Each structure stands twice: as C-alpha cells, then as structure tokens.
Image 1 (spheres, rainbow, N blue to C red):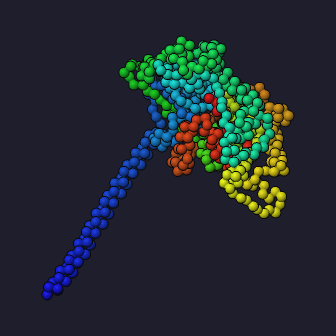
Image 2: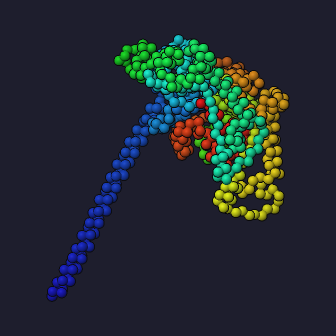
Image 3: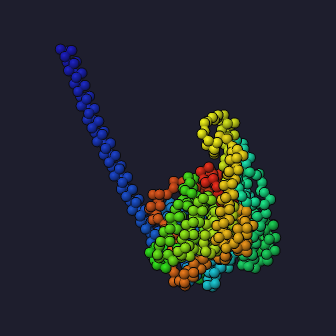
Length: 615
C-alpha cells in the first residue's frame, strides 16, 4: 500500500510536472510571440514614421524655396570644388557632402543674384578649399561680373588658403579673424616617386613611351624630376602664379612686385595686423563682428535676422522647369575624371569618363532633334589611349551633324585633349592645363616579388615563340620590348594625326609642340591648341551663335541626372569612403588611387602624371 501510494504520488508529481511545464511553455511562447509582435509592430511604426519624415524632408529640400527680401547669397569656400552639382538630398540630410561647392551651381547662382532685387550682395566665407586654379579663376570672373551691378561682395575667414584668397580678393571688404592667417607663399608642386619603394617589394615597372616631356612614367623610373619635366612644370607653374598675382594686384591695388615679395616672406605666419598694413585684408573681426558688418551692408538693424541663401537654393528658385524635350537646346555635356575603356574597380562613377557610355551619349545627342549644338565641358588629365580614340570618333561623328564646342575646366590634357581635338572650337581658362600630346605604356614586372620574395617557381609549355607574351613571371625580352615600343609609337603618330586634322596643322608642327609637353591655356592659345580664353558660359554662347540662335536657346545639362532614389539604389558602396579618403589625403589622393588601379587599366595611356598637385 505504501508502495502504491508512493507510485501514485510519483506519477502524480510527474503528471503535475508535465502539465505545469506545458502550461509554462505555452505561456512563455505566447508571451515571446506577443512581445515579438509588439516589437515588430513598434519597429514598423517607427520605420513608417521615419520614411514619412524622410520623404517629407526630401520633398522640402526638393521643393522650390522662397527668397526673402534683403537676402544675401552665401558661398562657403570649403571642401572639394566639384565641376557639377549632384542632386542628392539624402546626402544633404545625412551630412555626407563634406561642404563641397559645385562650380556650375555657384556660377549660375552668382549670375542669377546679379539681376535679383531681393539679393543685396554676396558673402564669401573662406575655409580649407581644394580646387584647381582654372575653376578658381572661373568662379572669380563671375564675382567680378556680379560687382558690375553695384551690389557688394564681402568675405570673412579665419584662414584664407592661397586659392581662397585669390577668389576673395575681389571683395569690397576682406575681413580676417584677429588670430587668422592668409596663406600667401607662391605655388609649388611635389611629385611622388615610387621606384625605390617598389624595388623593396621586388617590383619593377617596364615603361614604354613617346614624348620627351611625357613625365607620367617618371615616378616609376626616376627618383627625381627629369630636366625636361622640370622645365615644363616651372613654366606652367609660373604662368598660373602670374595670373594669380595679376588678379589680386588689380583687385587690391597692390603692386605685383610687392605681392611677390610678400610671398617670399610667407604671409601665413605674419601677424594679422601686418596683413592689414600691407592692405592684403581690410579689417580684423570675429565671426559675430563680421555678421554685424554684413547687416550694415544689407541695410538692416543689428537685431534683425540675416537671410543667407545658398547657391543650391538660389538656383532651385530661379531654375525654370526645363525638361530635356525643350527645343533649341545647347547641350552641355560634362566629362570629368579619368578616361577608361570600361568601369574600373576602385573608382566611383563621378570620377570616370567611360568610353562606351560617352560613345552612346554622343550618338543620342546626334539623334536628338531638340539639341542644336553641343558644348563638351571637359575636366580630365586623360587616361586610356584606346578609350580616347573611341570617344574622338564619336565626337567627330556628332560634329558632322551639329556644332561641337569644347570648354576646358581645370585640365583637358593628353587623352582629354585627344577628345577635344575632334571639336570645331576650343575654349580654355588661362590657367587650364592642356596639351600633353604623348603616349606611354606601363606594365609591372613582379618576377622579383614572386620568385625572390615569395619563393614561387614557374614552368610551362607553349606552342609559339610569343605564346607567353605578357607572362608576369618574367620580364619582357628585347624582342617583346621592341614590339611594345613600336605599338606606343603608332599610338603617338595616330594622336598627332588626330590633332593635326582637328587643328588644321601639319603633323610636324603638332609633334614640335607635342612630345608630352603640358601647357596652360594662356600658353596654348599662342601655339594653336586653343581658340579662345573664356568661361563655360562663353562657350555656350558661341555654340548658340554657330547655329544662329542668338539668345533664344536653353542650356540643358547632360548626361541627364538620375532621380535621387535611383542614384541611391545604384550608388557605389565606396563613394562615402572615397570622399573621406580624398579629404584626408588631399593632393596625394589621386596618385595613390592611380597606383592602386594601375594593373586594371588599359596598358597604353595618354594622360598627365596623375595629378599636377599644385598647392
């Protein structure tokens, strides 16, 4: 009986345990699912609110702004100056634009502000800006033209870079922070040489070139500049510096000799009071004092709020609802960055002139009946020789149907000049870098790395003498070197032939000013490589004149920008990091990026030595 009772009790307890556990598990699962459901409902609600907020924010940034009376156009001279504005409201909201200024947008805003009664003047705030000299020069020309309206231009800065000061020198009053600096010291460039570094890894670059001045290969073959390269850099750097000094002298009424003397003294370390005495700046002020001065120029009370309008807001306000179906178009086609045969990993879409896409776009412009003339806005140091030839042919075909005019930005050299030579007329800024008519090939020999450093061994079988041409396990032999050099020379002769035909010159004449030599726009116009010095707007007006449109035309930018949400989907994952690396490395970003992608590019190149690194 006791045993039975014990058994019953044990079974009862077991049953009670099972029932209790089942009940607990059911309650647990029910609570988990309830909590999970509540979590996901809350998360969904938050996401929905976020999406609504995001759409509303983007809609507000995309909608046409209002411009109040007594407004001031505010242009911050900081970040990296881009050639063309990109419609990216999401980046604006997330603050990922690094304060970049778009040259086309800034110039359009200045031009619009000149004729708007609501805009009383322009306020320039100097900062750490990276830009090529020609872009600075173009921006400065628009500011000078703006001043013809009688409206004011004021500038303030804690630090004026040399380029920033060149732009701000047009201002009616230049204000500097009492402990601020003006980095006035002259121009310099410092090429980077990789030869010894690569040798440490057992890598040797095999170089083939045509052109005494074609210095793009020197970082791999030399440890210092060649005499020919030093000569050309000295001359084009002097040309750019003389333009800077002449511009500042004319605006500030300071003799040229005095400005050059100040540069020798390095004004970056000079006390701010000395800069006032030398008339390089007008007054010393903190930011709040500068805003008070600005209010007085606007004509409002100290307690009133300043209405500062950005270039993007002003262009959005003044921009008509122009579609690509508008008739009497002058198409402005932007081509900036390295010229490549196809998309290359390590670049973003914003830094490429991809031949297949450009060829397709040129054909589309030729077929577009609304486009009466085309202006190519080029800012590139060149790239693949083969890609340059394909683009040259596409532009030549386009020019058979409608006028094609080139407007050169900071650079239009080597492969970019190859492209330009297919046009009917070329505009450049005095400080544009152009020319560099030359070809080179560069192929790494990594046999030292593979065999000596890593201990790898190679063997093989081949059916013909040249079957293993290009094998990375060994350097080229003399016969292979001769074949490559012959290919480079044929490419150079074709380049010279294209330029001679486009510029109505003899081939010998082109060769004499070619040989890879870099010229400024100011120099290039004297030797026939450029037709006229002028801005993008000058080029557009000239293109319209060629088809007798007078002033009854509409400039339309191409390629047509994708909607921001499509760009977001297709956006390169590296673009954010690229912008950060560019900001961090500054002038060294371009050469290091090129070194990273050298093995994935076309062997035969028509390009400048990476980036001129002028600072």
